Structures are given as structure tokens and as C-alpha cells.
Length: 203
Length: 355
Image 1: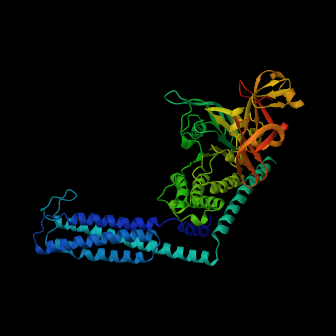
Image 2: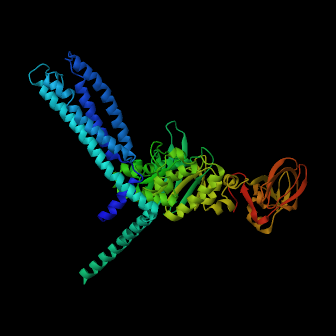
Image 3: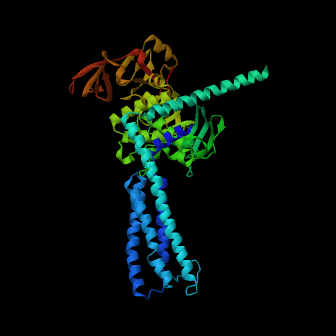
């Protein structure tokens, strides 16, 4: 099967199958987001008024971002281009968040959570936890970007393909029939070739 | 397509109830076999034993030369279509049809081509993105059949697939099934209690009663040459009229009427002089040119023909089918006769046909 044939078949499959890769990547970004806020909300020492307010604000932001990520995942699953933009915005938001509480917590030594077996209040624990938070947020952003890019490419290809089909420029039924016929002919000619080879050997 | 051989198959349930007795059948490749019989006759049990959904107590099941008696269902390469469709409501039609192949981890392009080919055969291409609840009963059943087709199984099994459909849809689906069988040339086993389905679809019919096979044969055989009184009364609508009587001096003598036998009938019944026999006559083989007195009780016009119900001698209820529009009224008197070459005689003791 040629690459062109595979591409056409993939596009035709997209007409009936959902964009699961794009949706799953968006959901993976959501999982990293969850891991991030599990760490963030486990902070024990939040005596600073700024930290308390920030965490309260972060709760609202997290809820919004989780909901948006989930909706976007469903959106790209159904090949909706708008949600690719939403996912990019979410990715940018995740990166901007790094400069909010995680950085403030690091600078003020507030990140002291019993996480991954780390002992709170030991020197340097804030740095480790900041790095973990950083990884989570970056991973989440990366997943959103990947989901957006992959989905955008698929949606564009599918739209072009559907346009061709709808305008009558391309008939997928004819294409599939021809493909079946070609394969049937190949299957018929293969034993014939084998017979010729055997006859030659016998001679 | 492979052959299926059922040899001395029996099913005994844990409580000791025997549902199927000594079932023997060789199904040839590409053959459409219909198991027909009343509820509880063991036809579905037999089909489920072939599918592997019920254990076979005794006997041997051979599919394509391979002993499948104790093989689990997944290894038998058989597809079954159920009465209740068994579709996944949360999946689209495409996903439903592709499901079994996805489980087998087949390449998605191969799956796509098989699903599209099946959808083309079943005229489901425009429905592929819909959910089952958006389709009609007939379309849902077509999806269930499509799910079987994509697997390209050795044998297709159908367990009363049209029972959930209304009469009109059942008729059109029946025709579609006939076409499908021609297109696929597949080996099919089909269970139904509807004799119309059996007569129209089958290459051969297996008529069952109380777990026993009553007759195996082509539809015309069961209709024109029933093996016993059960087959005679079960096949044909309205059922065959049966009269108890004796053979005495070249006559069929009953409490209701005497009937002079033809020379061919006398020869056939030579050994039954003085013995009890049962005379069977189909409603469509009753004529209005005879001597048997008949009083009309009901007149049902069906368009092309008329069913006339009535009594002979005020006792025996008889149904006649006349190929015209009739307007008999309650109490009208007729003189009935029988088409002599269409009369069936059965041994009253064994209920078997006399041939």
C-alpha cells in the first residue's frame, strides 16, 4: 500500500472515528495539572496572608483550567478547530502560572510539603518541590500544545478531504472498490506466478 | 465456506431435563439451514450449542473438519446475530461494527475497509456516524448482521433475528437476508418459530418438536410431503385439516363423512384395510365440488383469497382457502370435496405419513 493510499484511508477513517490521540493528550495535560495542584494545595505553612489569598485564587483558576481542559479534550475529539486555540491558551496559562505562586513560594521558602517522601522543613526542600511543580506545569503545557498541534493538522486534513468528497472531486467508495479489486488481482496473479516459477524449476 | 456436522448431539440440563435428543445434521458449505418449531422445542438450544454458549452433553460438533465439541466460543470462528441486536448504545454504528476486529487488534485500515464493505452490502453507509438509538429496528438488526459480516466467520448463526420487528419490516428484512445469503454465499443456521421465514429463506428446513427432529428437507418437501402429523400441522398457514377415520372397502370412513379413495390411494393404503388412519387436507386443497356438507361460520377476505371457517356435520371445525373473493355468510351451506392428489394419509398409531 502506497503512502498516498494510506493517507487517503486515514482521512476516510477520520470521518467515522474520533480524534482520540488529540483528546487523550489534552486529558494527559489535565492529569499533570491535577498533580500540580495536589502538590500546591498540600502546603502546610501558609501563614502569610499573600500565600493564603494566592492559594484561594489558585483554587478558582485550577477549577476553571480543569473544566476548560476537559471541554477542549471533548472538542478536539469531535474535530472542532476552535478548541485547538483554547488548548494553546491553556498551555500559555500553565507557563504563566510558574511565575505566580510556585516562584513566590520558592523565594519565600513556603514549599514544604510531605510529598514523594520529602521531609518538610529540611533545607532545600522548597527548591525540589519547585522543580517538581515546574515539571508538572511544563508537562501539562506540552501536552496541551501537542494536542492542539496534532488536532489542528488532523482537522485541516479531514476538512480538505471532506470538501473533496462533498464536491464530487473524490469518491471514497470508488477508491475502496478499486483498492479491493487491485488486491484481488494481485492475489490471483500471485499463485499464477508461483506456478510459473515451479514450472521453470522443474524444466 | 466450511461444512458443519452435528452428530448425535444431545443436551441434558443439570436438573435432568433433556432439551435435545440425538440431533444429526450435515450442513453443506453455503447452505442456509432453518431450524423451525414451536417454543421450547430445542431449536435455540441447538443453535447455542453450535455457538458454544451451551455445553454439548453428548455427541460431536465438527466445523470445517475440526472437532469443536469442547472448543470455547471464541475459537469456533462463528458469528451469531441475536433477536435483541446486542449493540453497544454508547458507540456509533461504525464503532459497533468495528468492535470485534478492534478487540482482535487488527490494523485500523483493514478494519475500515471491512466495515465499509459490510456497510455497502447492508446499505448502512449513511448511518455510520449515528448511535443505535437513532436507528429503526430493521436498521439496528442490519448493524448486528454487519458486525457478524466484518468478522468473515465460517458460519453465521441467527437466533430469531426478525422477531422484534413489525410485520412489514420483517418482510423486507427477510428479502434482504435472502439477498445477503446470495451475495456472501455463506453457511448460515437460522432459528425461527415463523414458518413463513422458514419456507422463504431455507435451502433445507429442520422441523423440531419436544427436542426431537421431526423432519429435515427442502421447504417443498415439508409442505408437500410432511413426515408426520406434527410437520403437517405446523408447516402451512392455516394449518392442515386433520380427520380421524378408518379404511374400509376402498373408502376413508370417518364419523363425519365417507370418501371414496382413488385407485392410487387404494394401492397406497392396501395394508391399512380396517385400520385407523388420519386424513390430512390443506385448506387450499379443499374444493367446492364434493359431497361433504359444510356450514359456514366465518368468512375472512384476505384480498387474493378467502379463508372460510365452518363445521362439517356441526362437529368438526374446518378451514378452507378459496382463491377468490367470497362473501359467505354465517350458516351458508356448501358441499366440499378434496383434490385427490393433494390428500395426505397418516398412520393413526405412529402419526407417521403413509407412503
